[in-house]
Length: 227
Ligand code: DC
Image: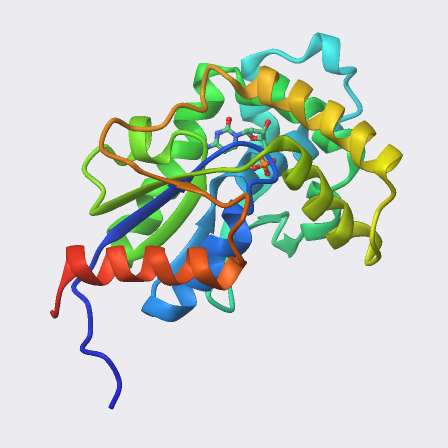
């Protein structure tokens, strides 16, 4: 027997870079039959859009960035609402190192944050969502049904990220270098990335992904109950 349908809801999953938020959120969304939204992907898409203008990053103003963001739209891909650029999927482009290096500069602009937040809120008015990011449980959905904040030891996060990219066991030197990059990214994002007071903190350092998914799904089912 399939579990009873849940009423419409919002589940937020926040946490630092490489804490496994997006893959966890996508999996949780599939379990609940909700739509997944990776808010970081929208910050990345806006950054990719402004990079396409060819304007040097030092000259980016909020106005220029918002102008460039007009080519970004949201589209459904499987269980996820993802950003498109000029109507096309842009997953590879938004993950390239130039975007990763410049996205904190864009994400610091209040006008850009308001734009991304509006996109994400719009999705939530249409369907139940599992949304991941840095401030989803604080600034964007303070009224969310379930709030989770994922933490993990930086060394473990670096190792997981490298295993995903390299598809082999990384060396200690590689993990050390990646840990350094992650700690710098954490510092660049620190203002936005704060756990909500009512968030459930989950330390995933020693958890398998399916265990963290199961915990969040259980929290959601308990909070949302049958329709
Ligand atoms: O999670 P990520 O690495 O894809 O995020 C990309 C960037 O966007 C990163 O600099 C943090 C920022 N971000 C943010 O400021 N607020 C969010 N809700 C999500 C991401």
